Image (cartoon, rainbow over all chains, first blue to last red):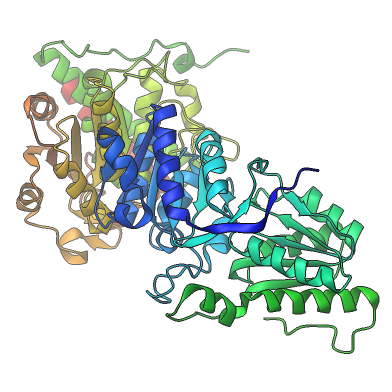
Length: 332
Length: 300
């Protein structure tokens, strides 16, 4: 199998710049795409689309409910609107619009949630987004996609636009390592096995994919073979793959830049509980708000370090072997 | 099986978009607004569920729009260049369903299934179930912003289709309404006409008691909309305002229609209890008799 992972990782590259470039390319390929912003286009780089296609760009001001509703009007007229604002605002302030017209009404609106997770790190907890996956995943008909690096943004955005029905596309603000080689070829709804192994599986999304790979590389030295699965689609969850990993490796760790409640970890837990119960640990934000600070250090402090993944793997391995003296981590 | 008379009836008469507003046409549409009120009364009474007051206040407005103003084709409901009507005050949908059925979107005989299990005629409008519905409605406040998006889309395509939104006055309490006003004014959406059914009553009291919105004309005008104020039960004033709205350039248009909640039934008029009240059999008989009397007045 041709490796999907760059070794070593590529240089840190701006995810939002990749998003802006991908938007422009999408606009070039598809006349039906329009882009809307709640006056944050300079933040999320949708200004690149504005510069290229000013007639198809609409700034509705700092008014997120109107942002979604105006996009609904476009969608009901046969356009493919991509609405842009900070991720937490879609899942909170504009949630009723999202529920009523996208999830229930089926309006073909794509929500690009910028600055997700802790990536708006210095702006602090009011701007950070740790519950969006849980909130939006609970809505029927929502599709949720989380790219893990700039190349993933480039490859997934056209699929998001082509997807039939509403999609939430969760984006990171920062420069992140280039993980994937050009062989990386994601399909919405299908998880990807990046590293094979049979001792345990780490299922990760977003920026935590890089950290999961690092954890696997460190454990490999100790003779522990981790499987690493990239689950870029949180909904619909690839439950077949999750179940297969549980059967084949007997232990699962999830890793996400989100509360451990209700996101990727929650989805995997629901899947396993019903299909193939196996030891599970969820790596993520432990049901708390974070604080201001440098991004990488925030991830480390709030439960998402490489070491946290390794610790979680050791816990599930102990439970799998039935040898743990303290087999259960604190359940939040 | 013998079909009901209504099933076999021809769709109600449509006065084409270009047709002059004759006295005969105005009388016919005015009479039919009462006929449609009687239909709504039967639906809500039959199902013991629904909203009569706000449905009665928009009877003339919806009748004028669907049987004259809107360029539509019920046989081809997805026609790309059709005019769009966003029915923002979704709870009053019994009147919208009645008008759509008589316009030929679905059989009139289906109206009694309103709010029944398995019916296409849901408690609030759903475009994927009911032909002729353009947007989900129910939670209030969406009409202006969604209408603005539709108007921007029409402009982008150089389409001459027009976008209409019907709001209640109670939903003017909602913040997203005013966000939508800003958007409509920013882009000078002259292909957008918003009609406010200003009946002065919302669920728990008068709009003046609950949340004063006057001076409403000044408010809309100060948001850079062109405002037309009319008597909202006068078909001739409604038709004239809709024509005038087509002549305004560079600004979206708001028609503030002064109406009466529960219009046509004496004990329902201006009474908050009839926002969602259900008549008993005696009230039903009285109400139907009053509506039929009004109908007959327009026949004369």
